[in-house]
Amino acid sequence: MISPTQFPPSLWFATAEPLDDFPTLNFQESCDIVVVGAGFTGLRCALLLANAGRKVTVIDNKQPGWGASGRNGGAANPLLPFNSPDEVRKKLGQEAGNKLLHAAMNSANELFDIIHSNDIDCDAVQPGWVRTAHYSGAAKVFREQCRQWQEIGADIDLLDTEAVYEITGTRAFSMGALVKQGGNIHPLKYARGLAKVVVKAGATIFGDSPASHIQKHGEKWRLHTEHGHITADQVVLATNGYSDDLWPDLKRSIVPLISVQLATEQLSEGLSASILPQRHTLSDTRRVIYYGRKDAENRFLLGGHGFTEQFGDHPDYERVKQEAVTLYPQLKSVKWKYQWNGRLAITHDHLPHLHEPNDGILTGLGFNGRGVAMSNVMGRVMAERILGKNPRDLDVPITPMRNYPLQRFYRLGLPLVVNWMRFRDNQELRKG
Ligand SMILES: Cc1cc2nc3c(=O)[nH]c(=O)nc-3n(C[C@H](O)[C@H](O)[C@H](O)COP(=O)(O)OP(=O)(O)OC[C@H]3O[C@@H](n4cnc5c(N)ncnc54)[C@H](O)[C@@H]3O)c2cc1C
Image (cartoon, rainbow, N blue to C red):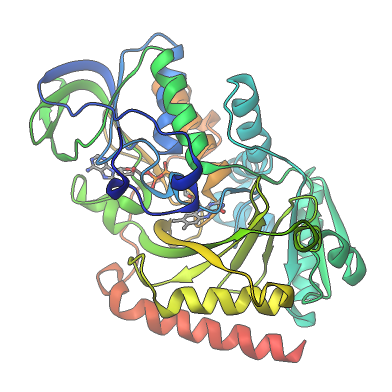
């Protein structure tokens, strides 16, 4: 069984059904496709390939869902973060831009379809996502972004102060939008459930098997772990914010950002009824974003940007708790029972990236904090590419892998940038 020390001490780990450890790779194996990373992206890709009759092996540093996929806020929100539809088309061109926009718009539905069609028990609900403008000056841009998404078919209603309050229970925001496809899941239950479906489809999963290097082996690729190796026609790298030196350029193409998460004890019925009563997800337009939801047992969760990878007490967690009480003063004396964190991946253009850095190597990453739904799209797109779909018809364009500008300095520079963004957010919040 999984030992408690292997997973972060999250609400999700405490409440998911345990899953037997997948064995370590300690022999030589060959297959058609080896997938590195057993998060949402890698598992979705593996599932489609196994269903198409390919021999698939998945390996992970730890166990399925150990990365961001088992630690996130579980907010399955569609659309793309940071970029408006016009900006996406400007960056990618009309055709590729529109494909990505439609895939992103439908990403939450795609996720809930996988959950329902495979009967994955993961507390999935789809009541909608409320995105709020954090100050009145953001309202104009916010309305325009909503208009552009509505134009391509997104089901979004603009909300005034009263309507935001009715759905969220907070009066902190003067306006917002209800994106109806949004919802939430128990992410570790989903990751483990998906892993079981992948195995049922015929793929093999190895845990506790960090891949150390990849080398060309004749026409194939050989992936080495400490105790074994796998020879395959195709390698899929689905390592996102946990990308390491396995394919060094990959690590340099993103900035791994830390997000911290907190969850309260179970709220009393009265308290629970006053906060997100229908279990919508909530986030706002701040540069340093906060995002919240309730779980199936009426605990309130809030997440935000942080710097620590510790699970013990740290100012990052205190800051998120204070923010929760600002949004919901009724949480003042509630106990916070869980705190944890994880790494997500930011790309230079804030778009998800699909790269093919060599024949037989494919990688998809960079969900910029919106990966619960979008990672499943990326997994599908990579499987479609491997099964022969023309690159022009893929929902995510294949682009060259480029270093994130000044990536080497992110550890030094990031705190400065984040603190500056937080300062600007606070100034705007004060304007109201
Ligand atoms: C705290 C937190 C909260 C978040 N909240 C939300 C949210 O509410 N909504 C939302 O949409 N998104 C959220 N995200 C982002 C979302 O979780 C991710 O975008 C998504 O899970 C990425 O999935 P993935 O499968 O690509 O990567 P991951 O789940 O990170 O999986 C990568 C896997 O690769 C493995 N790996 C790496 N290198 C190797 C190697 N060399 N050998 C073997 N295995 C390797 C790792 O062990 C890991 O399991 C959050 C992220 C974090 C960290």
